[in-house]
Length: 255
Image (tube, rainbow, N blue to C red; front, top):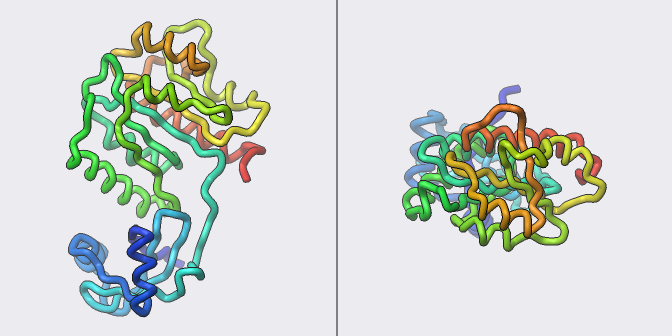
């Protein structure tokens, strides 16, 4: 059986649709996607997801109206939020961050935090660029058939990120050429207690400064590496994401 195509819609709009007889009014962009890109005809079915673990089947009524086939509290599919949450803090590179967003979403990341560092090329993000990043994540969620959309946080400084360390979170920082760094997969396999969040911070192409490494160490961040090669920022981010998701699938902590 062919899987129905998916459309990600904000949960608040979905909730409001059930107050209007289960009818959902489409935006211009959503209508273009369904009618021009997917070429759905009147009466065709597709799936609506809210990015918060729920999916409903819907009928394409006319060019800007669809009707959900089940009530708000009775989605066709529903799943709990993945546990523990796996999170990436990434210094935004000159090129490749769009791919980091798309691929990490497809692999299974839960939280993405763009950070600025002492050697970062970007220290702030325009509202237009942030909106583009959200659109990339939306498309990746629909394509990969995820029910949970990753949380994209506002850009933060590296020092602010280290100050968010909590007792029940594991904070790690990707490094190179440090003798006392540990392979990320080895660290994960040897965890002896459940953590609510697992964080990996990926630095800029120029690397972390000595000051940043000292700050991380004082905040009890563990130095980790992902292999013997020196990786670009975007490659390191995807490598870390894959290792984290693979570990979570086989972890006894997963609920």
